[in-house]
Image 1 (cartoon, rainbow, N blue to C red):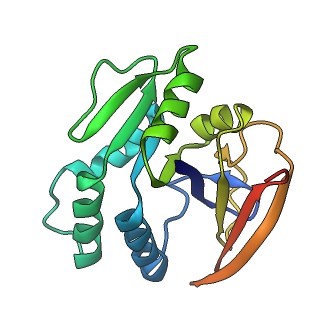
Image 2: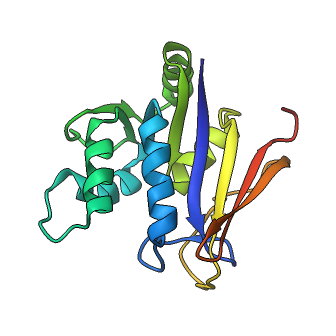
Length: 180
């Protein structure tokens, strides 16, 4: 059975904003390694549209950016959306209606390994359904004062299981549901 892991870059004041800050080279290489080991990723519409950037070739990319793009393109993706009519290569559209829980439970049951959950709104929905197995907060030493909060609703009871310095002033905090 797959494990759903929600990992996002977060400011000190709890916001997720890909335009407000980005991972440095050390953390970016960590994300490449993580993506190489994942069984796939589940995206909400907004985060998927941001990540579609990696579908296109950019001659100005560094070697690390090219490596991430290769891994991202190869990885299976499931996109939860009520509004998209289609998705790009190696992606499957999952309707965001009342069948979300059933679709996600089937996905968990049909796969092995870690599946990334990307996007705070989607993560909130899956948290409410009790489907997130682990939360990875990549805490950056910046204060934004705006953006989307990492937890889009009430924070579930969590238990800290690890805290790891990731370089460049970033700390990874790993939590599991308190009842796990």
